[in-house]
Length: 209
Image (cartoon, rainbow, N blue to C red; front, side, top):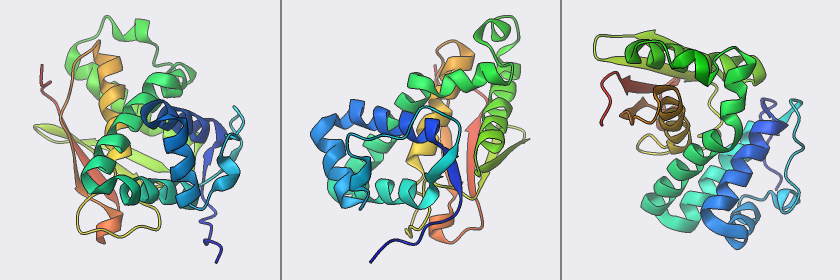
């Protein structure tokens, strides 16, 4: 039975970056097996084109995440999704920063706390502008609250605990990029797959290193 599509999309470029990052993390045979299990065999050796057309369906993105967990188990799947999320930012999502004026050079001269705040807002704006994933950032005392409305990472999935590890990886690597190499604790505290309305992350202000 064909999976019901969401009608919500990432641009092809983001889908392509994520699949290439997954291939880097799990190898050619690994990604091939995952795409077969996710019932997206048309993507094997045929990643989306490198353009901003919104054509990579959230339902497919969620199914790929589900297949990773099914194939590698919850713990192995978590590690792979985190690594793929980090690799996605490193491989190309950082390019989007320059599109909205968040260049690396500009970040060199501002305080760390401001870098984190500006970086998170830039990431939220990037996804909101280029995809159907709408994100926003609010500030609390010890952390920032990063909210994803209509989250592709857990689309169509149910779980007893938060599972958007790919999103955590992207946020971690994005913050490492804007901070010049520091690591930050990112914790998902609400997840649509669990039954929450939105996927909500706490991004702690103090770096781990």
